[in-house]
Length: 104
Image (cartoon, rainbow, N blue to C red; front, top):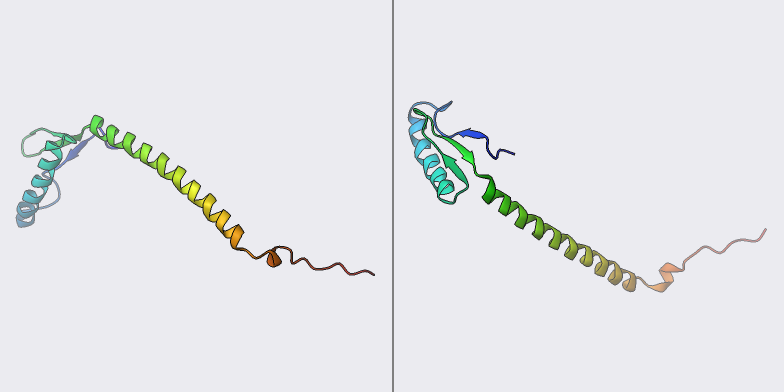
């Protein structure tokens, strides 16, 4: 995971006019992440390295794990109900359709 690792937001491989256009779009997105407390940002010359903040992402992960557990339980119960419905819908003649043994 990238938590605590530095991510370069500005500088690097994009040059010229494309860099100016991309800079505004990236800057706006990064600002939203920073305001949400998901990243921290510092100035290093022309670079603006960012770090992912661990605590808010850990809260999201804990919530998602709880949601996942609840949904798995519900889907398991749904599987059981569907299996019961399918068993009830199968005609008895198909269940007992065994070939009679021939006497020799």
